[in-house]
Length: 324
Image 1 (cartoon, rainbow, N blue to C red):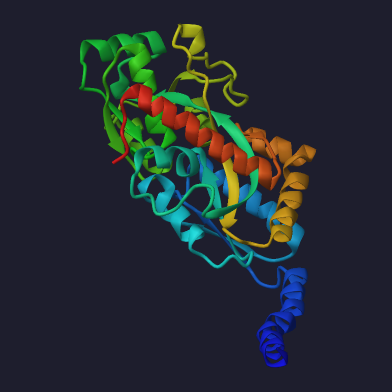
Image 2 (cartoon, rainbow, N blue to C red):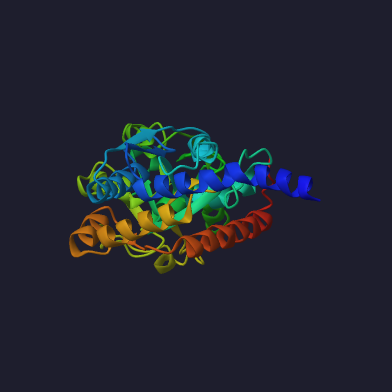
């Protein structure tokens, strides 16, 4: 009996000795630069929100935060990199409605689970969708565009960020409600689609105003309608006002880290971002991107991801869209 007890003690000793080291490491965080993976290219709304959030994080924590754009597959490539990183607080990623709620609806082979593969840190904000168009849209308002699309079914091209994104899913919903048929043209990011919208290669895109509002104000793109009133484009009517309803969905941005990251690190990040985004200067900067700050606890953000995944799966089922 004594020999067995001695073996048990010897097995436990390394863990006991290691515990103070883990505690000290957590207390010391951060001691080196943090990497933030943005799963879309520079130039779009997700990138703009990410850079603003990481500026707050860097200033508050006193260490550099490097924004690393890793686009592809509707945001799932960059998100997978975050899921497989070390959970030490030095790699975080931007999560979106597309990468962490809509992607499981479309992909059987998704290499991560939007909830269990990550540590939810915080929701950052929400933004409406806006239907923007260029010269090949052949219209200056939503009723005229719908009429034009009906006269040439399957001819007008609509840009998207790929079939695994929420924008694509909502575009299909819009087509169904409006009774039109558009051709999908996938891009890696909104910033890459804007030139093709302006030169007429593609006709329209269901986008987030945080990336395209400036082009609309400059008259380089036409804003047809928004899913909800836009602070940066207050004169753009809603889809609902044209009888296209229910079509009032929003897009959200959030911050995640690899699963099993220490909860105290997640909570500190959340507190820092809450202080930054909910201050008057922080709110103003977010509103300039047409994003409403919504800072939530890690638990509440995890629940949002799980709830929205169920919501978009139900919509895909109604539209007859199956995961591939």
